[in-house]
Amino acid sequence: MIAFLRGMVLLLMLAGPAAAQSDLRPLIDALGAGSGFDATERAVQALAATGDPAAAPVLRALADGDLVTRTSDGRVFVGERDGRTYALTDALTGEDAGEAARGDVDAIRVNNRLRRAVTAAMGSLTLQSPSIRQRMNAAQAIFSARDAEAIEALDAAIEAETVLSVANLMRQARAAAVLNSDRPEAEKVEAARIVAARGDRDALVLLAPYAEGEGELAEAASAGVSAIQSRLTLIDWAQNVFYGLSLGSVLLLAAIGLAVTFGVMGVINMAHGEMVMIGAYTTFVVQGLMRAHAPGLFDYSLLFALPAAFLVAGAIGVAIERGIIRWLYGRPLETLLATWGVSLILQQATRSWFGASNREVSSPSWMSGTIDVLGAQLTLNRLVIIFFSLAVLLGLMAVMRWTSFGLQMRAATQNRRMAAAMGIRTPWVDAMTFGLGSGIAGLAGVALSQIDNVSPNLGQSYIIDSFLVVVFGGVGSLWGTLTAAMSLGVVNKFLEPYAGAVLAKILVLVLVILFIQKRPRGLFAQKGRAVEA
Image (cartoon, rainbow, N blue to C red; front, top):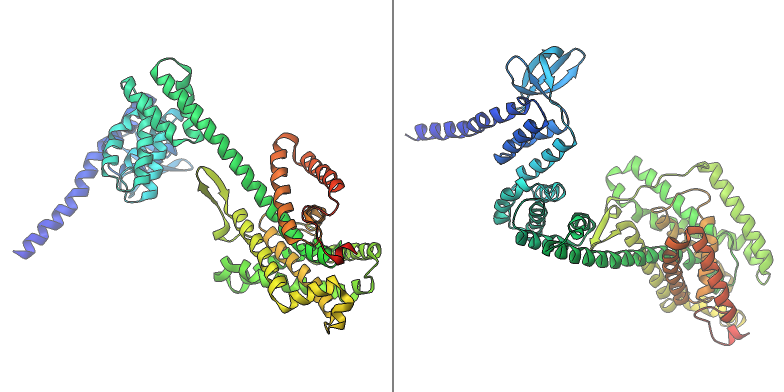
């Protein structure tokens, strides 16, 4: 008895798909039975009305232009042309169906209207897919196609949907379909309100034609268009602020190290940009080593590149201070010329070693893509750089405020003779301070490698902006460096749409010069006897 029941269950399981296939087969063959696009579109709608997911691959093949009809029996197959023959595959089961001569098959032609119909049908077929992503894509496809035939399928899908965000997207798709149907105006007015609540550019494009008419629907569409335009204006403004802050973060990263070497030590280091460049190339080398020896950890390569860049740039900075700058303290013009010469040497050495062309530094997967914040699209790599620059600034402040080295550094820069009299090894403090500023520039290079080209000229792009930020914020003030970098970044981004990138930078430079005429010591002027002296 048990064996008999098992046999019945097996028969039912086998009979189910077979029955479904027998139902779909004539509808699939109908795709090639008509004599025009209208007949094919009706066949597409009939397939979509079955709600059977097995029809989705057939429609996908139709949209790709891969379906053919065998003239001898009218059967529809997926055909792959190979010279003068076609390799046929069963459109429903995917089984090999042999070959046919070129003259024995007719390709089913498709046009743009038919492709849109297929897109809408695909949306209907996948509305109740187990995959949330597929259901969302299906709803979005119907929203774009505005297919009135999909309203009933959407009603059934909305009733069965358990995920709120997907259900909302389906309601918006239904509203778009209702607007494109011959349903009563009252239902269309409600649909216009639902579409307006979506609030994005797709909704604006959909509602705009309805706002040009007269009547209650036009009024609802016009109100929706106005609300969406206001929202998009706010989103554009917020995105400009975000891009301004991200630009400010880049300036902050490039200028923090200079705030130490120039702001604290008073050394005009024209090779500071090359420290940034060395940090970027260190990232390139670390990624190359990990790609060759530890590909499984490649996604974390930046975490390894950060300490490496800090140590490499810091060590080169210490070497420059011990080899050149310590002989030139008190002679700023000679220091400027000497460090400028060092920058040229470092650029040429990099060019000889790595070549003059740009080097590719990959972004890890967790820094790729965008996130949607109230409709504003924020790029992850710039968001990470904003937080990273603030972390570096706070870390530097902590070192200067709470460590013995920070105390000795501040003492040596404020009154070198008294610090030396108290037993502080001022030459060692000078070297370590310069190394710290250079190491931070190396960290900036790691961050900049994610948004800029890694080339021997990378540092030159930021050296002038770095000096501008330090002078504008107030020499020696880290808070001033932060404020200046962020404010200059935001102002620059708001000027760019009206004046262009180059003219905006010139305008910012003129504004800073005018400001310094009024406040020569910048936004946050240092006070005290050492400064007054």
